[in-house]
Every structure is written in C-alpha cells, then in structure tokens.
Image (spheres, rainbow, N blue to C red):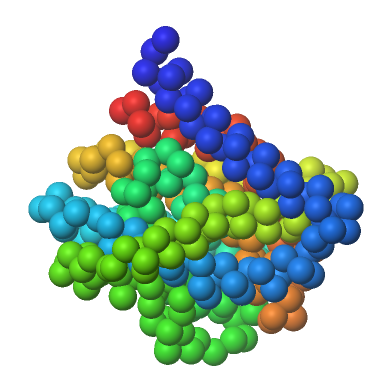
Length: 311
C-alpha cells in the first residue's frame, strides 16, 4: 500500500470516528433527548472552560526543545498568513451581494471549524503536537473572529472591541500556556490527572454539539444554492491546498504541516450562525453553509490531510 493510500485510510478513519460521534448528537437532537438549545449552553462550557483546559494541558505536557520553540512562533506566523490569505480571497467575492449576506459568505470563507473539529482531529492524527500547533491557529482565529469576523457578519455595523482580542478564552489559554511550556512547569499528580480527564472531554463533547447543529440544517436548501457550492470550494479546497503549498515551501515539519492543514481544511465554523443571530443577520444561511461544507469535508479533509502527511 502506498504512503498516500495508507495516510488516506488513517485520516479517513479518524474523520469517520469524529463524525460518528457527531451522529450521536444528531440522533439525540432528533429524538429530543439533547436538542440544539441544550447544546448552545454546552458550547459556553466547551469554549470557556474545557477547550482552554485542553490547550493549557497540552502546553504543560510539551517538552521544551529547540524545535518546539521555533515551531511555536512559526505556527503563529503561518496561522496569521492563512487567515490573511483567506480574508484576501473572500474580499474578492460576492461584491454585488447584499452587505449582510456578503458578510456571512466572507465569514464562512475565512473561518474554519478550528476549535470544534480541527483541534480534535489534529489530536487524533498527530497527537499532543497536533493540539500544540492547532492551539496557535485557534488563538489567531479568535483575534480575527472578534475583529474582522464580527465586522463582516454585522454588515460592517459593529464596532470592534479591542479588549476582546486578548480577553477571550482561546487567547487567554494560549497566553497562560506559553509561560508554562517555557518554564516546563510540572503540576502535582492530582491536578495533572484532573486536567487530563477534563481535556479528554473536549473531542466527544465538541462533536456531539456539532451533531445537534447539523441536525437543524435545512437539508433541502444546503444543496440548492450555487453560492454555497462556491463557498465550499473556497473553504474546503482552494484555501487549504494553497496553504499546504505555502507550508511545504516554508519547509514546515510533518506534525506542524499536518495540524495546520487540518485547521485550514475544516468546514465552516459553527459559530457563524451564532454571530449572525447576535448581530441580527440571517441565521438560516450560516446553517446551510455549515451543513454543506461539513458533508463535503468528509471527503475533502482526508484527501488533503493525507497529501499533507505524504509530501
């Protein structure tokens, strides 16, 4: 079996496991055991507590080596380049579309499901180094989401709150994690064990929540609009493939290249609909974008990530 085929099978298996967990959330919503309204409350728990603990725990358990020190700075730089490239691509699209819808399309093109899908997948495929490098991507994601993202989704009406650049759980967890990594702090066994068990909840809980959101998509609409297909092409193929070549050009090592490619190749961020609701924009369109890109990503992500592992 060729390296590419072997990698494809491995990644497809990991993607399949995560989506099967999402299917549990889908079934729970449809059976009214655990519905989207419940999941929205769980999102706060995930985003504000479990995800930060996962990130901090990963930094605590990374060995401080020259490769990891350089990799940390490099991962931030490449995550920044990825988001700037995605913003540049999105800015060229939907120029004649209504400003509110255009904002949703731009947000969906730019922001991947980095925390709730990419980070768990990076952990499954790469291990703790996957979380280490993906955490840098999540931190950069938050900076752009709270500035450019909100500006776009609100139809360019919302004022940018600069304190949110730092005072958000993703950024704070990385800010806490980096000194712990640099100082090689070791926690007492009881605290380490507690953080390990809490961080283990991140992947299954995130995917169950994801499944409930997917259960509420309008499946008649997600495959009916040509604009959504175009966003799917940009989000799932053009941006990650272009960035994969950039990562290769920069000589990024396999672990970082794979983790960042997973982050760049993930479907539309699930918080697109949440931000749309918060800023009085259409909530149906974001759900359709998340729905279609999530379906297509079952095929596109394994292929692109397998290429990242093979080159």
